[in-house]
Length: 287
Length: 250
Image (cartoon, rainbow over all chains, first blue to last red; front, side):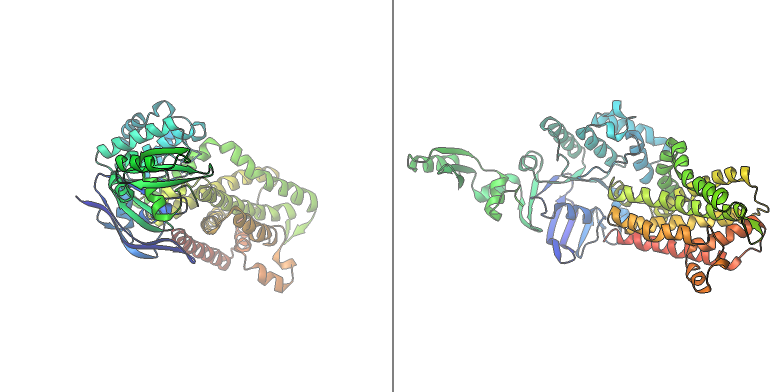
């Protein structure tokens, strides 16, 4: 499979703080790759370097075969970016924001209207096309940002925490949208700190903690590294102990062997959260 | 210069033109309040009956207030909008991530300041002429005004790109722009101040803008040396814009 993103020994340091440490990673063409980690793990910094907004302190990156450091303009033509925070121009309406992006990306002016209409239809914002940004809901703003990022038909779409702050229904709609993009051949590099989002969407995930990539692979294979079944036991009514087993049968046998003092016990499938806790000793949401 | 650079420059300024066209009256009114107040307070109030360099005070002060207006409008328009787009709206990132050259970004962000500086100055000039026609406006006057707008628009872009917080921007305006507005020969003649102070004041680009505008409006010999210095400030601020833009991606 073709590599669309290749990262070699990437390090990014701000003053004395290393935000990304010696990162090596490949992302394949057409896949949804999840970059999973807690806040401050280095996910957004990695995206900023990959999208030319920040320069690497050391290391090399190629996006769609172009060297990010030496050929940033070529990289900019093949990527679309949806940042974590709102980056729409609040002085423009939805259509104008998209027109600006089309102009910046040299889409011929006679194609603007057709392309903008197609994308607004695609993300369900046609009725809001003349509205100012502040009149949109949080989910609509994100959808507008995604539509804008797609206007120049990028090969790689970077989505930095695309569903933060969105309610569950909007989040699910956003997931469908991301899946359909991948189905159309767009490679998606998705950062998230929502475990369920990575599990639901991503063909492969990289787990990052304190700037280092600590695990990489298919979610089911990563779960295997801790065991496919997990037993949660509430100890003394105060804290939860987690035990991992290769399968549910082993987990059930373990539970049956416990003394009757253990009151709250749950047997469930292991998750990427369990992988993260095993590797780092803390939960994804913890700082 | 190829067509793509021109088209990209227009794209960058297009956003701000959209905003300006929607808010033209409001923005013009806002930029004209302060200079009209200066004109009334200094021209008709404090300076009534006074003469400087052979001209009535109102004739003398109008070019100074025009230079001040051009400076503040050009600086504020290009600087504050870019500052807000970069640090608060964060939409400037989208421009940085597009395949548009640094030249187009800088020129686009500068041109809106130049345009508004010229519009405000022209509106103020029309208002001034009602009360006191300037005796001998030459073609050197619009040329000087044009260069003045470019100089301070480049400065606005530079400071907007360098500032990391809103405080940085307001600090620069309080420590540099405000003193420059009042001390650069806008309201008084440099011949009235001690020579040592006059030398210090000649380090301000607004001083040279005032000298050029005043000479070309009142029929005095044009100070080409000041025009050269003013253009030199413009060239330096233009280079600083590139350095500042490069620093944003560190």
